Length: 133
Image 1: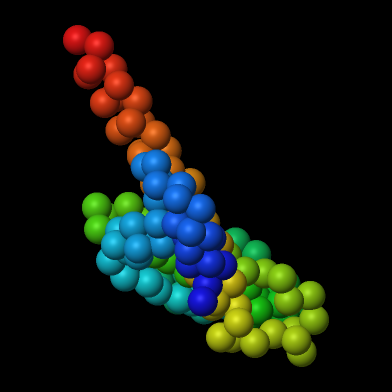
Image 2: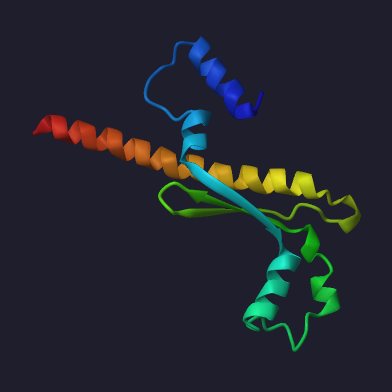
């Protein structure tokens, strides 16, 4: 059970049922997820656009840690894109691709919680305003 689901279960067990977001709400707004690492991004930019300006070629020293930086792009139902990043692996030897993807996904998901939280609060606020008129 995820930390999100544990919290939701605890809220329910305490009878805290005021309007709130749930993990299912967050799941429902995600249309697709995509992953790549920084090396893939830089190489693609050089190949497709030649618009990365580290020099005439990718500098070996600068590129050394790029494979261990993982990006997760979540495309939401409305077309908005959220990017999560994981660059926590200090030593390339400790890098694990699946763990990097998991952590980048969690980073992107946290951003969705914030945005969806704002939208819910705005809807509640507007609903209260509507009652006044």
